[in-house]
Length: 372
Image (cartoon, rainbow, N blue to C red; front, side):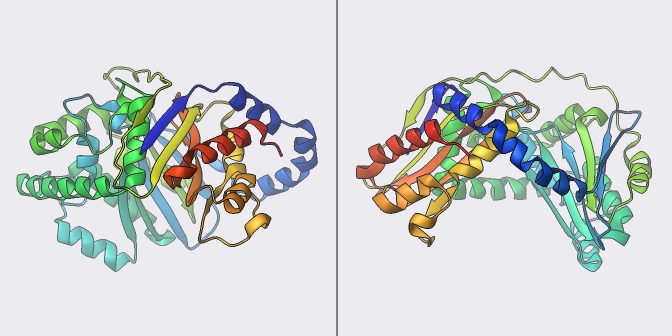
């Protein structure tokens, strides 16, 4: 297994330059305009306490609504790394007005779906429901993040669940490689830590740690209530004011710590493994950077491939054509991972040890010469 990083050098700059080809933009501008006209307007409103409300009304009979909170592993330190993910596990274990069973039955009887996930920069709680049940869905989300009981018995039970989840992740080599990738790309910074946290932290995190994390980070300016489908923006605003209007507006924690990219490499060699799992990346950009969209397009151009796909030399990705023709790898997938102020753009591949050098060679060539 290997993870390798390089700064956005000549290959990356040429890639972005090619993607800004004027002829391509002019040729497709009418098509883009037509698509834009068919996309529902995104409406955004900021409440007095800083919480933002965003919606797109497409007139459907169903909707998806969720809370996006700036409270991922990047906002943790070495001693509480894993807390955000632990909280996600505790979200559906009961509140002051609903037991875990009550919550599950209510969601089931609504014909709805309730879920959550944690990333390096966000914790997200969301529901999929019928549009008529939007008020109930928002109320349930509000109850979960503001009134969870965080019972000691539930904490101990979830502690075991998370430890087992960590063991499962260790068997997923792609997950392991991407954790190594972040560890070496963002050395000694919060982005270099894993989302699940180290085992010793999971064994010691307690109710006080969870409560402190909520009171520190779950503040109005750090939350977006977003909905799409059959939703009324004005109704969503009213629901947000009623259920989240009392959230604190002040955020006293430290500003986001810069996570500097470091070009480096990690290799973990195990000769008993038949295949090499490799990720190589260059430093990319954050969500708001102008180059984000070109890099997304480049990510699509490089594409992905595995041996189960047909098409042969008719595949749209040039790298896929070369991999298929030259038997360079078992699979590859391009990725573009964005954070607030930085990002990783690269390729994950699974190769036989004897073809790694050739696959890396053709990957670099494709990065240099990719164009529309």
